[in-house]
Every structure is written in C-alpha cells, then in structure tokens.
Length: 307
Image 1: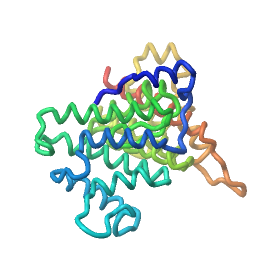
Image 2: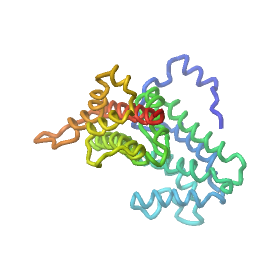
Image 3: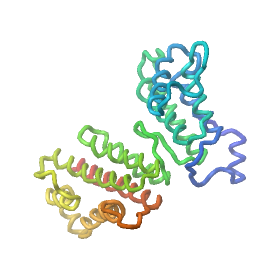
Image 4: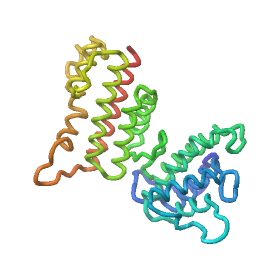
C-alpha cells in the first residue's frame, strides 16, 4: 500500500522533528505496527487460513533457532493461529535482534513465497510483494532506523547515499551465478557488522574482494593457481586488460589504491594475531571498509562487463 504524506507528518518535518541520523538500537512501536501492516499485505494476516502454512514455517524456524518448543505468544489452549503468534512475538519482544529476525524471515517469505500465484490466488502477486518490501524499507528510513531489506537480508546502513550508490549496486552486480561466492561473503560481512563482530566483518570484506577477482579470472579463463593473494590477483586482472591500458598509464596509483583499499585495512586490524592487548575495531572503521569493499566490487564487476 502507498505511504501517504499526511498532515501530522508534514508538520513534524516543518518543526524539525523528523530524524536526520540513523539509530540502530530500537524499533519504535509505531514502526513495528507499520511493518506488520506491510507484511500482512503480502502474506495475509491472522485468521487467514490459506496462509497458515507460511506463518507456521516462520514460527517453527524461530523456535528451532531459539531452542524453544513454541513462541512465548503461542496459545496454550485451542487451535493455534501461527500468524497471530509471530506477529505478537514481533510486537512484544524487547530483543532488537529477535525483532529483526522476524522481519527478515517474514520478508524473505514475502519475496519468495507470496509471489507464487497460488499463494493467495492473486494475479498481481509480484506487484504486491514489491510494494510490501518497498514500504518496509521506506518505513525504516522514515523512522530513522538504519536497516534495509536487500537481497533477502536485513542490512545495517550508515549512509543512505552510500547504501544506494555502493552497497545495492554491488549486490545487484553480484547476482549472477558466477559471483555467488563474493556476494555471499559481502552479505556475511554486513551480517557480522550488524551483530558487532568487527573483525569477522573485515575478514569477509577481504574474502569477497578476492573471490570476485578469482571469479572474474575463472570466467575469463585467465591463468591463476588459486593461491594468489589480493595483490597477485590485482596484477593478474591488470595484466589481462581488465582495466584499459590507457587508464593504467594515466592512473599509475590505481593498483596501489586497490591494494590499499581492502587488504591493508583487514591485515592491520583483523588479519593477524592481536598480541597481548585485544584489538578493538571501531564501528566507523568497519563501515568505511564495507563501503570501500562495495566500491571496489562495483568497480571490478563493471569493468569486467565492459571488456
């Protein structure tokens, strides 16, 4: 359903009451209710019996992962309504990551299951699914909550511009089967970032960067042993004309820039033993590395497309 710019919203904007920076530690109650409306548009809501199998799967998946036999919101007596259980669990849980688990699982179902014509026997199921996902992401943005649903995952974002210009294009370029490995690693980097696993995020950044170059080499049948470092892979790509010669000549520091962008940060912060004192990697540095990795992936994948 479309999002309306109602009077109260306009007044809040005029008073400067709308958030201009992202927060990551809570989902406001109003946002949760709006998310429920969006997911029910596509999946159907409580008491919609044809849709109970989908909601049952979501409920059972959460229970398995949390080590529960039933969600705390499950009815103790009478016939269970799985949509009601999941929705109420989402509305009531104080654990942010659990709330985001529900959002991710439900909108994966929106993206994959609700598109099937027989799900609700609707001719416009694709349009409804797209509108539901679009509303979710716009609601996140409207409330200044720094998450988005992209490619089946909830990703933390720090800059809407960088997310739109770097992260989403990177994921879109990596959608082909040839690039499944680097895409998975880039998504893992975001997942680690969301959970505060800074060093693991940096390691996945380097993996995705190296995996993309290996995939390009395999696709183009360029000779590699499979044991190359990032620096060696960059050299192979350069030697085989991934970047036109005149660009290489003009920008003599291009190779150095690529070498320094992802590998150096990862090696210095997370690639080796930390010694006697624990190494603390600040979130802002991890965010920088994620955006730098995304920029490098877009650059390399687009260059390969133009060969």
